[in-house]
Length: 216
Image (cartoon, rainbow, N blue to C red; front, side, top):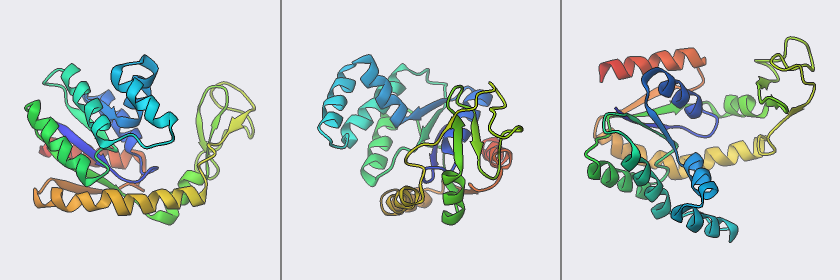
């Protein structure tokens, strides 16, 4: 199957994508990860993208679409694709349709992980990680068993992402509503949109996605 996972940053797209990869052998296509990998590998697309980013500009839809195209070329036809956070705009949605058709694939389902903005702010601003091993924690929902000590490695040093603050989270939500949410009606007209509660426990969201996959 070919799936789009939509939702604002923090909705759980990355977590659910990783679980689909583990359980079904699908391929997660996260444009951010692919862009960083292309830059690190000094591929032609990566070199072009790095020059644009170094100039303080946004990478164009054409470059992002070229990354998606290249990944699908390298994938086995029977391997399902999870588009994590892509498409973000109407132009990207149109480009994705063309790319999938080129590779004789079709989009099976668009899953939107719906969130409550205030709860999302709480979820994101409360998270932090072990500075040594990367184990994730949260101020209210997952604290270390022994305060100040990482459960996994015993380190006493923790860190928070500088952009995990309320102002940034609400700005991301605004961008999502303005740029990404408007692509949903087009998919709804095709009858392939399914909305799930992105604020539910991870296991419940995973189970709901599994039901969708079983139904085809």
